[in-house]
Amino acid sequence: MKKFRRRKYLINKPLQFIYSGITIYLLLIGIIVVGIATYYITLDTILSQLEAQGGLLQAYEIVRSINALIAKRVGILLLTVMVFAFVLAVYYLHRIAGPVYRIEKTLNDMAEGQEVRPVVLRKKDFFKSLAETLNKVIEGQKGSKRQ
Figure 1 (cartoon, rainbow, N blue to C red):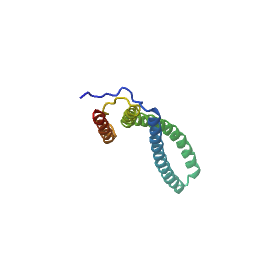
Figure 2 (figure 1 turned 120 degrees about the horizontal axis):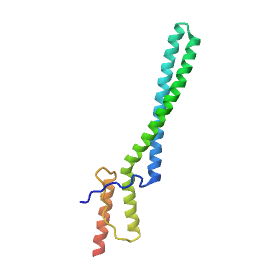
Figure 3 (figure 1 turned 135 degrees about the vertical axis):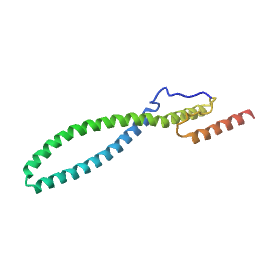
Figure 4 (figure 1 turned 30 degrees about the vertical axis):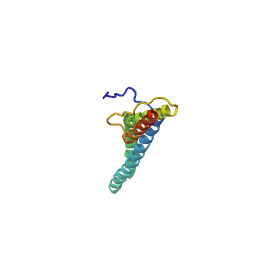
């Protein structure tokens, strides 16, 4: 059996970009919610401790300088995470987009009356049961054409 190797990672660009965007969007929501919750819990604790010691005005100045530092670091971190998540999403969504592309191409060829070969998917691809069902249909059509 011929071993299939990826030649292109962007087979179905709209599908892969949409799902990559959704992945990044969900990831960012989680990061933002956890980050904000952690920040406000920590900030509240710091201000409570400094207020108990009587240095509330000084505490706000310290927090303001910490906020500027955190904003820079979080911005760089979020950008890095978004790029990394996008690359990984495209890489892993190739396991979905590749089979969808092959199955769609086979169905279009069948609709045009062209001779089609069975759909062969890679080891880690999704939709193997769908490809097997389509292969049964292809075999059934070949059998009915012979008779």
